[in-house]
Image (cartoon, rainbow, N blue to C red; front, side, top):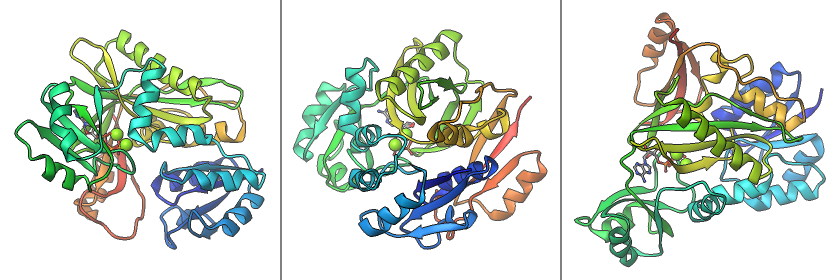
Length: 350
Ligand code: ATP
Ligand code: MG
Ligand code: MG
């Protein structure tokens, strides 16, 4: 038994709730939206803002442990919950670091996980000098709150710095060198409360327009690169004394070396294939870690590809996918919207 609280009402919260139900746990969703897609698979929902102290205390008192599905929860939200006497996993150190791209890159550098070369940008006048330092081509990224490539602008020495600054919303930023990677991969690490580590196989990820399109297993990388990637993921989880699933996004260079893009202190879109290819998928593994259960083997039993189903696709084509031997997983979000993640589909390749 036990009651697990989840901060956040998106698809990751929805799939965490479904995993918790399979484990015999009760779930309470805490989310600001009144009709979130997570709330519709959970009997118990608190609709309130992340700074609503009274509601957070009530939530904390009803839960044995709390986790989150969304990395832009204010640090003060976790403080209120912990003061009310309920533990939150993962802890706020990972959250605080991943909420600010500058802090994140400084932290990664400090623990020996090299990020793409970067430079701090406080205003449009910083862009050209930073570009010169970084090889003439870069990606300007707002320091906080971006996802799916939002709040980013590609720039080179012919770009108008004012236009790039406007595009990202005139916020404190970092300029990253444009990386001519060979491919992208990610590492999905689970770490338990006792320090036990279980690492899923490393997916190869294809993005289009900054949004994840698909993840494929096995990744087309050497065993040495796979091993090196896993070592970086494990180091990250250990240095943060992390509990739960953490995802590290990596660029694989033509010589096989690795550069970090970013990490996410939560279950991750590039881990959705685990639900069909492993006995225990990422959502259940995360719940095991958060609840202090032993971790499951991350062994992958089949080759598989996960395709994201984005909002510009007709719902009817999801049924077609089902007929093609894929397993569509639809999030039942209210409202479509160009490029919005509305579901994903897993297809077994072997
Ligand atoms: P999410 O959190 O949804 O993964 P995000 O908004 O944080 O997305 P990033 O991960 O920073 O975005 O970038 C999205 C994609 O854009 C990357 O996966 C990669 O394909 C491309 N990209 C990002 N930074 C660079 C870079 N420095 N050089 C080349 N490509 C990049
Ligand atoms: Mg991101
Ligand atoms: Mg990313």
